[in-house]
Amino acid sequence: MLKTVALSLGGRYAFSRRSTISFISLVAIGGLALSVAVLIVVVSVVNGFERELRERVFGVLPHLSFYGRESLPGDIADLDALRALEGVRGVVPFVQGAGLAAVASDVAGVLITGIDPLVYSEVSAFDDYLLGSPELRAGEFSVVLGIGVARELGVDIGDRITLVLPSATVTPAGLFPRQKRFVLRGILQSRSEIDGRAAYIHITDAQKVFRLGGRIHGYQVKLQDLFAAAAIASRGVSALGTERVYARSWMSTHGNLYRAIGMQKATMFVLLSFLVAVAAFNLVSTLVMIVDQRSGDIAILRTLGSNTATLVSAFVLLGTLLGGLGIFIGVVTGILIASGLPDLYQWVTGAFSLDLMNQYFVSYLPVEIRSDDIVGIVLTAMGLCLLSTIYPAWRAAGLHPSEVLAHE
Image (cartoon, rainbow, N blue to C red; front, side):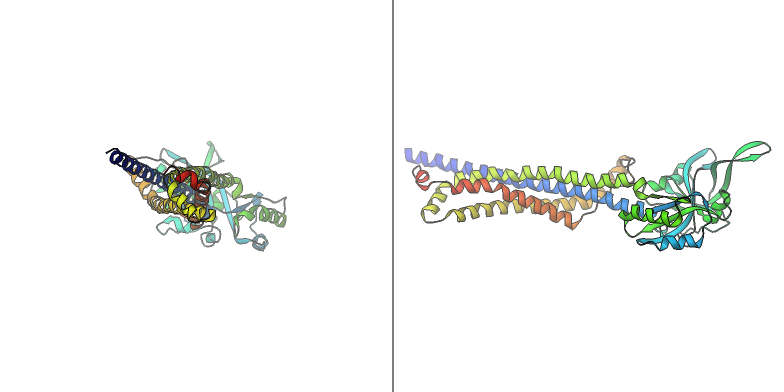
């Protein structure tokens, strides 16, 4: 009778231990999957911001600009000198100045840029983000506004807009700001910060508005390598003359933002890797409990001649399988969440009338899933899982068969 009760209690105890081990194993796998998924989602969002800055902002804005200390004649010789620089993909002349766009009592600050639409594609993907098919023609005094400016003024294609310059015109009645009526021919929708201040007009019209005659303010340049901007700027200033021009690259306007995105990605990867490490080391408790539960089996294997390498390999393999399962689930979950995040963000902002991205240079949530990042996350997580198997494997290998079997 006592033996029956003991066996019954022992069976219940063994069942309870097996249930506990199964539960802890599921927790370890789930924690590892969750941490890997979070790391993939966060890194993918940071990648999305980096891509949008590189493709949208740097796709529309020039990589490098040479400004004349005074207005420049726009000689072909200057264009040829800049195009001859190694690493330069395109060069165009431009006219640029700050101003106001006004419609009735509504006013918005804009950056007026005079371009030649026939050659501007050499330095900008401007045409790719235009709504409709607007044409800027010399003498028509037409304008393309960023969609943010157009919404602020409440105007649409075909409406008339007054561009006001900060310089004044002297008349018998006194000083009046220089202004000119334009017709809105197109809207720029790059979904970036440019949309809130852009005003593009034909370079010939800009020369008339700014009273430059046939002269220009400088040259805009597109580079093959963004990070060669400083070196090419130095060579360009030397070629045109330091007394005539000075250079300004994307690094002076958006360099801090670009570096901040890169630093944020590295920081988030390191910080969230600690989360993965915590989840990975949860495998230690699981494997230690398995060692305790299977100590009798381990002792029998040692008695039958199994060596230390066999036992260590078995527990390393077990930990790798558990970790691999968690990592696989995390990768699949992270990719699915990251892929659906832009649509989810759009639905949430639309349903609740939120503008969560108004402080950023894009107006939506960008996501880019990169295979190299996935591989890096998987290798990091797998390495941490392998480290977590060392102590349990060492503990199993250190069991003495005689001591274990004496209590069986």
